[in-house]
Length: 181
Image (tube, rainbow, N blue to C red; front, side, top):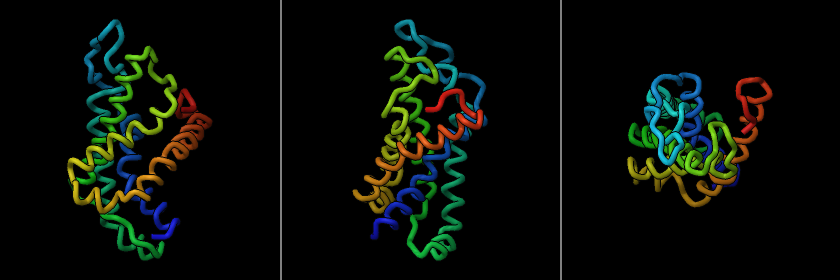
């Protein structure tokens, strides 16, 4: 696979993981997952992690995966490169895993004394990637190993933090986020 093809493949494969947390923010609110509980004097997760946001984020990422599968032949032909398709299990694994990764990062942030919205470089950019990849592997192991080859994983790990910083910076400048991270 050529370098450009690998980058396109990697970004396409990760789209169902890139969307859930954004959808959760847009549709969030509601009851916090931790129910307001504390551990060691700090919230377990905080108000930003809600059942509604998790459900809607997972549904959005899964729906995107299934939609991408429908348009893959046309997009592949237009781009002149192969693209992966997504089974329901793969899409659900990526989407739910992205949400779990972000929830796990919130837990770690609270344990280290960081408040909601506080920066945690590295973790902020890759938490959802780790969760998405792990859950996709568990949910659809054959699909995962065919889709996420070593070169694709390298692109994901290198490109995602850059995309994360750029898109969050734009959202901050547009007034859609309170912090640029």
